[in-house]
Amino acid sequence: MPRHDDWSTTMTTGTPDYRDSGLEFPQDFLLGSATASYQIEGAVHEDGRGPSIWDTFSHTPGKITDDDNGDVACDHYHRWESDLDLMAELGLESYRFSIAWPRIQPTGRGPANEAGLAFYERLVDGLLARGIRPVATLYHWDLPQALEDEGGWANRATAEAFADYARIVGERLGDRIAVWTTLNEPWCSAYLGYGSGAHAPGLMDGAKALAAVHHLNLAHGLAVAALREVVTNDPGYSITLNLHVIRPSGETGDEAARRIDGLANRVFLGPLLGDGYPADVIADTAEVTDWSFVKPGDTDLIAQPIDLLGVNYYSTVTVRMWDGVSERVRADGHKDMGGTPWPGSEQVEFLEQPGPYTAMGWNIDPSGLEDLLLALHRAYPELPLMVTENGAAFDDVVTEGPHGPVVQDDDRIDYLRRHFTAAHRAMAQGVDLRGYQVWSLLDNFEWGYGYSKRFGIVRVDYETLERLPKASARWYAELIRSHRIPA
Image 1 (tube, rainbow, N blue to C red):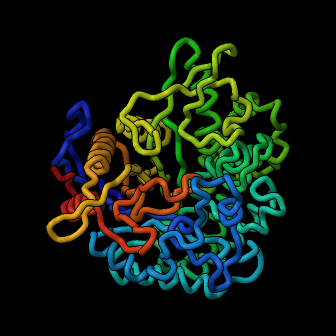
Image 2: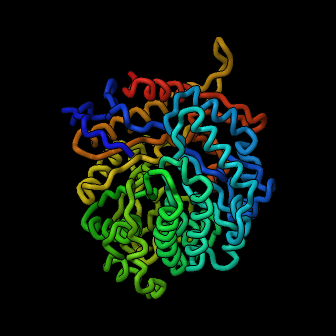
Image 3: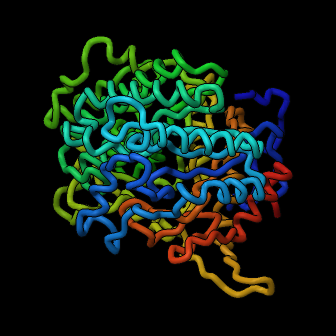
């Protein structure tokens, strides 16, 4: 990834509400959009694809809003060419997509499925033909069900299988990808999948959740090493984390923030960046697990050099210790299915955040993004960053305009404008931020919420599957064209 050393600005302050305009980004600042395979592809039974944990989970009654599933989703598997044309029309400089492991290895092991590899090869070649840089994520939560049947991410063998999968994909696409991202939000895979029950595979076991944390970290390290062996161009290697911005409240807020920072942030950043697992997290979770799943040499395997850290940001949390008497507040922004995503720290409570809110109920706070980028820069000043997801769900309304239907999503435009301003302010204070991928290109299957939440800058009619760029897509196209935040 290029470094924009020649870019400078004196802009460090602006409007208190982050509604600045006219701010310019460097010309090599990579502006794009992001999606994930299970959320958009559909075609779950075609061309040799095997079942994933999300196929199983979404077909389990009561797990997904309205019992929705990803069988068709946005039908991107069949509509990829017109979707790429749409990306080109909007001027995207990059496209962050994920590869479905069960398309490549239907059971998570064994020889490659040629049809699956061929699909992603067509996709990547189509991106390059349109001048769009491919940013490939190897894992965005769709674990082959056969591996889950053997223990999933709580099983060390899954990390080893992931390295083999990474090598297969790297051998096929390793001359064309601009940025390789190993994992998307391993926090969600581990804690929501194995702790809270909100995500596939839907388990509620704190010990398995923490084992999953480690095996996901290990999978990252093994995958980076495997990719480096077979890739022939000069890409960036990265991982994407949904690091939590934590605000303490009251006398016990600092202790609560320490605990949650450990589970949410430091248990990933520590081993990934060479500092190992935090001793306080191991102590906090001693009654949950003895951490015997960490084997000698593992932390060295995990700490592979990376070129870029992906940062996903949506909202903040405010915490304090629960008094044990009043009803515990659990407003952590995640769907409550009965378990906890915070093993060993169930005595922490998450307070309601001040609004305004998105349709997800998440608070809108662009200062959190600025704070997060600055904190990472202070802790790891030599590590380049990229915003790999930022966006918002709103209850979009389709109206009839003079030239046909329109979605005038001013709330989303306002959200993006304020968060791009936050990113610009962080850069003005020295943060080495290389790009920004808006979530999401398309309305899609929003995991446990099914099709009830729309994040896209392009509307998808789930009955006809027609695409309709919203006002936010046109706004973003202008930002990309000018590298300047539009008025």
